[in-house]
Length: 497
Image (cartoon, rainbow, N blue to C red; front, side):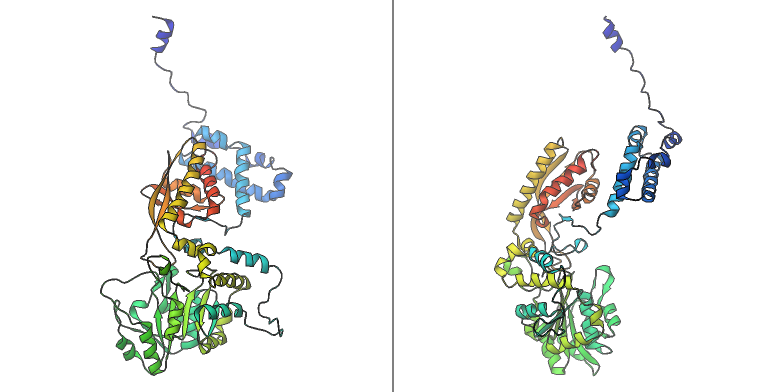
């Protein structure tokens, strides 16, 4: 037998653990002192932050390392790299730089929820961004009249557009629809009774409840009917000499199905006129045109329909189906709007100049409804067909596969059919047929991959189903594909996460 064969038959030597292995205290003692690290902060670093801030972040970086050692999640080999002065200073720098980054940054919405409340609801059209860039600098023709130089209502420009688009006599706007509802009740029904169907006493996100809003406004709630059914005679039997309003609240974020019924807005208006009281219609989503007519499998009530029925005041949101900035819309009769403007609460909830500039630009897009699929992101996303969304998904998947090839094929990329949603309480039971790009990373849980994508410099929000990350193509904008590819590369490449 040769000498080589003899050596191969001998038992392998036992592993030699690195210094500090199994000795937590030794590992902790190996961490560099703060004084030594702060000496590495030079003039370049001091331009970024003062010495005191570097001290705070260096201490925090060392504290993070200690916590990982104590928890057993960092051993001597990894710690040897992480405790190097250069690595600790780099970690401190990242913390300092993150603090200087703006907080409310643009994110990539790959959730398939078109109006995602937590991500800012509607994506503003380019026309609104152009208007802000052009008219926001310097001063604006806000509350001054260019002809006579006198003071004028600041919302008069959007009022004119609402008159044109809805046929209303007058209009005003406030900072959101919750304010609009409270202001309408305060201006038209303080210390008087308002009749509302029991099934319409809704609660939406953030524990916003109609009965609470009514109580804060000073109006007195008179609920009628049952949870699932209300009849016209229920409203009529509830009217007393203290009644001033009949109110309908659109159940935006849920639907009652099965044995249920409600009174039409036309019948409510006819009853109100017979008794000399007003009708307020809280529509929530605020549709200016029919989305069902453009292929969406569902419909929201139109503002114009309520006004044509004779409603005194309609309230709605500007950042839902209208696709503009956050805003509460109030359209109706001249008398109702005049009462709203005269109420002391009106000034407290009015819109600022930037919101008005953006909304005016958005509303002008509705003057050309035939172009909305090209000019209005919310409308385009809602009305996109499954075939169109599938094509977008294939483009995204092809780009991500190219990125995956450059990172040793660590991620499996596929395209599947998926269901999307309108969001923000609009059409809550409607599922939009769409497509999603799925990601499965080798050796990484889906939740961890989703977290890394969210923590990229351009945060990518996804969904996770059955331990797989989904990128819904419907809500991904065309110019965001490269950023998603960059985020995926950073998530899977060692050292870039």
